Length: 111
Length: 115
Image 1: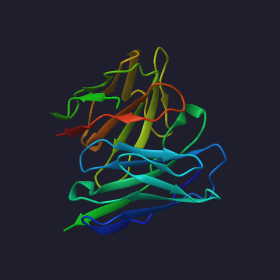
Image 2: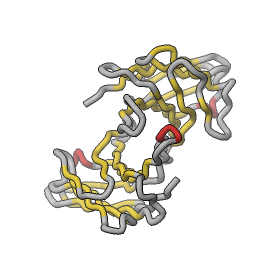
Image 3: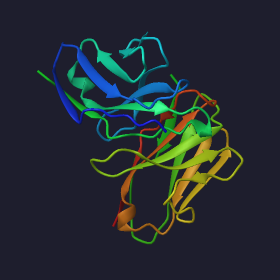
Image 4: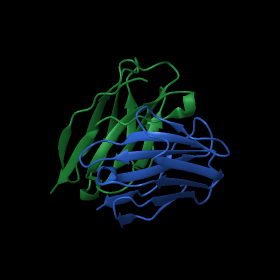
């Protein structure tokens, strides 16, 4: 499975954009990049996913580099409720699509 | 979005007893469900893949006789921790998807404390 690398932690001021980077240099051509987040003591919440093109939904935007070796999750206007651990995951095709979670990035949004 | 319900949210039991955790997909049929375990300040670790109507597939190092998984219907999977011991205390989380290559939806987790 393609491995991902994320910073351990990041801080962001409330109302500002939070940009969370992820490296996935061994990603294969048909593997998707998924982002989930986990608020303390809860199950992970799906945020967004993409293959090649940039994606946007009501929660966030996902920017994937042209070579697909890295991506950035953007929360356009972070709030205190966005404080969570954010996981960038490369989902393999086939094999049951098991999602393997790395250590993620602890995002702390502060006033 | 799709909802996955997990019950109970918290359970405390005595050492040596068995505990059953239920995972239900409320508004879709889940051919596959996954069970994860998470220790404090660590990431989620996949324990097993549960396929409806067949035996679960366990990850390396996970004891299948200790963590019994049943996926008898398209909306329900259960995880039974048999003869629980304090080292089994953890946060257990299930997830489900409709079909292959679709996104996973997660339950809210079960905090198991074994005394």
